[in-house]
Length: 297
Length: 319
Image (tube, rainbow over all chains, first blue to last red; front, top):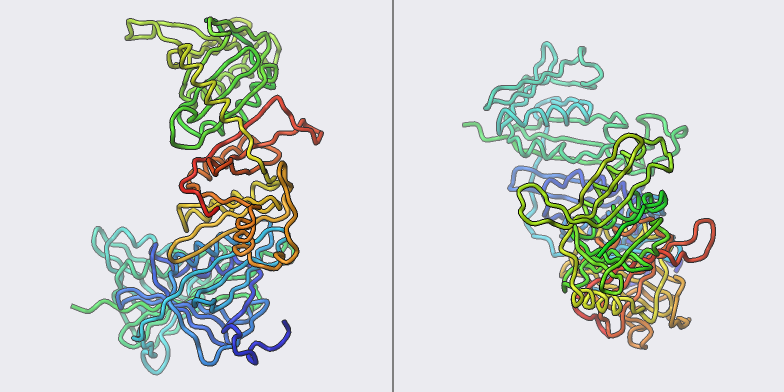
């Protein structure tokens, strides 16, 4: 069928193909901090966005832009949205990922009953297929209005592996972590108090391989619930550390914390072709977390 | 009753590296059934639940100097803990290697004995492994159940005979790893597996819940037994529609089995079979998997070793 989908009244909203299912599994697993989570999916001509949220305090978004897909035929008017179980979607996609076999998958929405349709492509004499039920999403938007803190952003970029390790270490002290940005000397401090104290400092100019960028013109300090902070790094896939990626953290007005990761969605190339740390931008999924600060007593 | 034999090097390798690791996963206990010509390992043959696993070895594959006698047509059967047997064979192998450097004089003898263990007033039966070295001997005793009575052996033999029935149609899966990888990951999605096998050589495994349907289809597999051609007009239909039409025509059968049971039967891949054949017994009584071993270096089936599993059916699928 070569006719443009937009011209046919029954054309699906989206038909897309991805040549590396494992990449999508890795990106979505990043935002899977519980076994059962309801996600909101929004489709547009720019790509697919998946959003999960918890108790008004933590929100995560996965951006899969259309350039990640080997085929992306968008036929909808406006931006269709639907609800889906994140755990089910990830576990299902994972069955399409098979070591040593072609991992190309076709995703179509909607099916006859508004399902999300998945099927494997280009496999000789065998195929995997799935239909996942979707829901009508709730009308209330999760409003995490992220605004810049002052005249200039308060932001730093830290090596993702180091951030994860620091947050893992902060599990012991207690249920709350204080993040402070200091102007002089330029430094980011993570502090946990409770069963003992633990303070982790990333000093700009000193740990140049760990703290990759730093911008702060006002000193700030906010507390965040440990379990929400932990959710932002707990499921970063292994390739993020292997590729030496950095995660960017920004503190917005009122102390809202934004954590951004880059996850490679590309197939692993032969070692001599892949240069450490570099991936063409079109092969990266963007992950964003928003964490609300704790109420100050 | 008497049983004594020497395990050959080939026999020890087969058991230690391939078969006992698989049997260890199949279940805690199994029956060992010895006859003049064969040795059987039998899992779950007499109790109703669980995956039945039947392994048959011709005596010359495993043993040298095999001697058996009993008042029951020279048949002996008993049950034992598979992990204890596995451990005994593994450590006997390392002892043999340590003492002999591989000399033939250091052979591994296995025999049925009655011994009086510590803190017991009654002698108990054991399967004993004995390695006689140059200067010393090492003896390992694997406790076993009281050998089965004549009537119990008849019951076992009857169950074994009825378990040997072949399904009318079997499809051959050449790449069991692909199927194993799929079902292993699929277990997070559903508990029940719908298996459909057609005379055209299609095998479909699918799980359905209220929120999701997920399945994998393998087409154009080799068929042993009753076969038929798939109609050309079905070629471009979805897997689901194709199997529904084949079932309606009488060209396919469908049964439901537990995912856990299916995964357990896949543990038989540890025996390193060359391929696996899947079939549904008449009236959907069970799902049968037969593992094929080829004579090394040829395409001929090695008939001295047979291994198959029978999975209980939860509910007969649409017929």
